[in-house]
Each structure stands twice: as C-alpha cells, then as structure tokens.
Image (cartoon, rainbow over all chains, first blue to last red; front, side, top):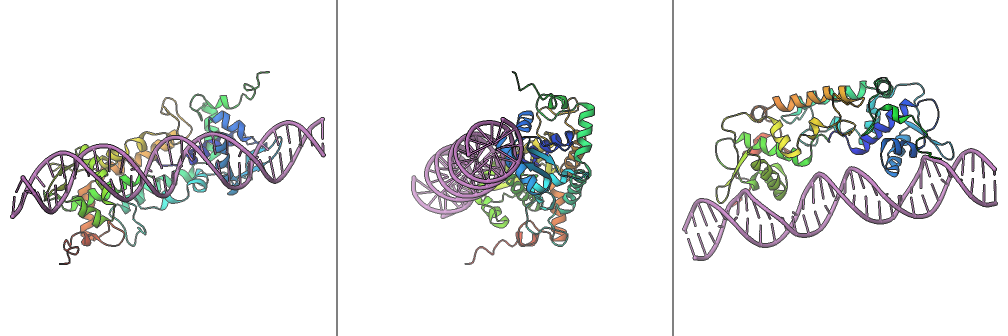
Length: 159
Length: 159
DNA sequence: ATATTTTAAGACAAAAGAGTCTCAATAACC
DNA sequence: GGTTATTGAGACTCTTTTGTCTTAAAATAT
C-alpha cells in the first residue's frame, strides 16, 4: 500500500474542504457523514493536519475545520508528509538503513528514479486543482456518488 | 510503505539466490544468517515463493531453496505479486472501490500515470540483472556489508 | 448561569502485520 | 534402523494500524 488509510482519509477530507473553501468552518461530523469515514477516526487525522498548520479548527456552534492556506495552493505532498511522514520518499526499497548514492543497494538507482515520479506527482498536484476537476466533471470522493452529493446539505434533516 | 516487509525480505532473498544460481540448493538458515532476517519468518516467505513456482525447495541434508527459472529471467514484479499481490498496481490512490477510467476519482489519471512508472520498473528489472550489478560493484544486500560477505562460507564454522 | 454544539485528548478494542516457537515430514548418511 | 539436516505447517505472541468510546474544554446562544 502506497499510503496509509489515515493518509488517504486525510486527502479525501482535504479535497472536500477545498471544494468549500469560502472561509466557513465545516463540522467534522458533516465530513465524516459525507465521506463515509468514522467520525472519531477522522477527528484524529484532522487534528494532525491542524497541528501542522494545514488546517484551522474552531470549537463550538458554527465551528469546524477549514483550510488554512491564505490563498496559497496546497500540494498533496503537504498532506502526505503531515500524516505518513517522508518515509515513502526517502526509504530504501530493500529496507537497508543508510542506503544512498554513497552506499547503495543494487536497486537504489532504479528505485530513486521511480520514487522521483511519485514525488513529482505529489508535489505538482494541488488540492484546488483536483477539487475543481472533481466539481467540473462530477467525479467521486465517496464509494457511491459524484461530487454533487457532497453539496445537498439537507438530506439529513428529515423534519 | 511501498512494499511490505515480507516482500522486501523476499526480494533480498531472491537476489541472494540469483548470485548463487548454480543449481545447488541454499539452506534457508544460511540465507537468514547472511541477510540478517529471522529464520522462521524467512521460511514462511520462501514457502510462498515456492508455492508460486518461483523457487524450488528440497528437504534433508544438502537441501534448501533455489531459483526455479529454467534459464528465464525473473522480473522483480513476480516476487512482488507473489507476496504483496496486485493491490499496489490496481488500487485507487484515494481508496475508492471500483475506481477506474469509467468512474474515476479526481486523482485517478495522475495516479495511473505514476503507477505505470512503478509497474514498468518492477517489470523491466530482473533478478539476474541486479545480482550481476551487485556483484560487479560490490553493493550491499545487508545492513553492513557488500556482496562479498555473502560468499565467505566458513566464518560461522570456527572449529 | 445553563444548555448546546462543536473540537481535543486519551483510554480502550479490534484487526492486520511481523516475528517466534514447536512439532511433523522428508531425505541423506551412518 | 537410527540420527541428523533440512523444509512444511500451524499455533502462538508482539507490535502497529485502524477504529471506537468517553470525558474534557471551548464557544455560542438563551
């Protein structure tokens, strides 16, 4: 598995927030409902992201989470590093400690090249880019539906 | 983590066998000693690889494990598929089931491209290729040493 | 002040991955 | 046959990841 489940959930939630990036806080409960992720688990993940300064949180009524980006683009890499750390991009493919150009394993060169492909993708892809693409083409962020289902806010208030 | 620890150990052991590919069986105990991998754990991993027909085993004195390749090159992909399965190369980066060209997530296209880089590397790199490179340049397959330490067979027989 | 809505923090449980141990089966050698 | 060297198979333990639950803290509204 390339990314941990926590990281994948973190990415999905980040994309969700990027589609609603209007300064309002989104409650975690709403995100966990829409994205079908355990509320408490998502809470812990988002705590990591707010600790890293990628998001901002606010307690109480009308509170929740929002992106904290001051207009700057957020590359996927930021989320991955905050949750999974740099392991994926630094570690030897054969698990040998201290493997590098100086003292490489037989796979080092090829893996370094492949890894650069991953790094590039994560660095050059941004949340807004994907969020816009997702909204334009009505792609999905959940098991079932398109981006549109993320927006009908009142389905869960039957009264 | 890209590959599981089992898979990484499997790759290291496969490379070790590729350096000694003269038809003789290598005891697992020797491999686990040289590669600094738990004997029983390595045994289980090698059992998977022999079950897949990638290796052959033989019990009793002078028994052990050897590559079963009939002269054919073994791409790293074979080992990875046998141990970790195809997950890495088929799964959605955002963990959405059934994500594909028909019903993609916003990241699908970019991830598919990146993933092809990984696939290509694993398919085009072979055990013999890496084993030869390792022997020529005395690279390492262990924490400490170069390929050369894999060959002095008598250090562990002090009498 | 009290009740309500929300995040924060941490204990706890379940599942998966990693690693250990024991015993059985097979083959060789004496 | 009996002993030894080896793989095979399965139970078992330990650790990490994933997921749940409970309580506290903060902010708002009445």
